[in-house]
Image (cartoon, rainbow, N blue to C red; front, side, top):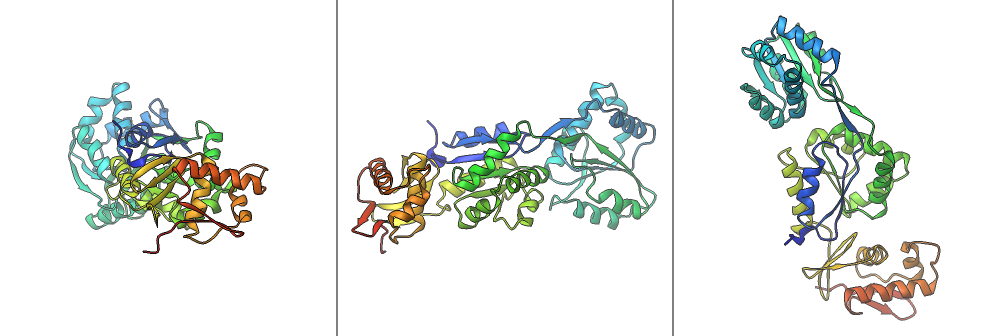
Length: 370
């Protein structure tokens, strides 16, 4: 039996790598997950430059190896294995001082059979640079395995300090698998058809926001995130940086892992952190696919969910028929359409007690005075 903690939640995963693992974890809790990767990962396993730089390292072994991402370091080891260079590369790196930019890179170093001598707690290249400069890099030969976006200033910092730096980029970011899916996901997030958007990389987050701006959805996303109606969650502070730069309220997972990101979402919706209002019938939390009323999930149509969200946001104030017509979809927004929408909402909620009629004025939610 599925855990209903995320029942009625539509969640967008704006990521390519390991997005299926994340989606499966959320779907087990009742969520409807939509994958909308804003970028794709293109492996460079057959890249001639990667192999040429690996051969250079074998000839002249490095003093220091910096691993910035787990997937990148593993990809580099896999590429060396595929081309028959694994044993020679292992020998060349055996006496090097290994530095990891975070826990994922640390795990990849261990998986390859090496020992990480130091791990950056903040998972930033700035902290890696500070550590290496404090240790002394003059005359040192340093190889830096980069993520798909390439150098982020670390190469230049260490070169200026007198190090000989060789960059290794194992994969690169490519275009999204389906640009229209990404565009549609931004409109859903800004228009109330999604409850959360999850990000696992800074380049992916930046690309998704660029699409949102082009689609005219960014202001709606910003407004809904500020109100708490849309959860924007990032796997770590580096990933969250493009979101913060756009002044978007964003939650950052505390451990920088996909499992932690999933728990962050589950805690938000299943732990009472999502916006809610206290009504005469119990606590009410509105989701894109329904409502949780007094601990019980009630599925709703998109129109009914949008109407209930408007009434909930009013916090007991009366909404006129004109106010309600504005949140209804389609061209039919007359008085009759409003009455039909309210009647259908009441039917889905199991009665008329929650949505009250105020004669000659409109409708209001039965918000508790307690």
